Image 1 (spheres, rainbow, N blue to C red):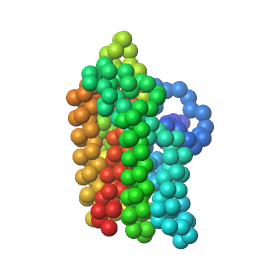
Image 2 (cartoon, rainbow, N blue to C red; image 1 turned 60 degrees about the horizontal axis):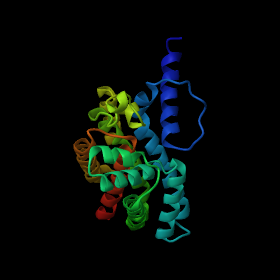
Image 3 (tube, rainbow, N blue to C red; image 1 turned 90 degrees about the horizontal axis):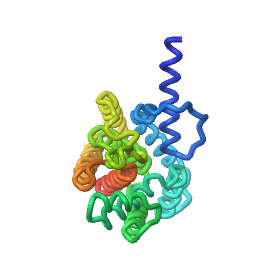
Length: 259
């Protein structure tokens, strides 16, 4: 009994990470407000699985289609698999930080589900950048960079949620949004274990080429975290998604640069 309970808890946390990060159907999970912060340690592993499935698709399509077409199809698969979760965060963040001059205005725009000119531009540039970079990376390296990118970009949620409070925690005396469920709730052990696992797997995938992507993702995480703290005093769910997208592009850029 003492063994079954921890195993079940770990499995539930893993399923929670899969449920949150993808559109893959998972069994119904019992409600637990502490489940999502615990599940964060599995975000990089789920990202690795997402990248691995995209890499498999790339390997299947590579002999039959031009690199740009393969890149478009792989990116389409990734968007469908993740339900545009991080694309939505990037677009909303671009609208909020681009169109809001005060903290209150930024948070108000972030609530708005409609997409504005800043969001549309950011989303277009993100899609174009990923297609062009994936088409530029040598085909025999793309699989490794796909797995490393989705591993490392999901790692960014760990340090951000460890270091920053929810941006809306003091409004109306209540917390709101996804950011409030994980911000400042990531434990030091989750951050340390998640970081060690992510760096180790990235090193196995890319060998000495892992240095540039790891540094790039770390810089993206640090700078975006400082920016969120200065502009709105913390993070929202959209902020996590925006950093995730920028980090993914940074890894692909490292791959194209190395090529």
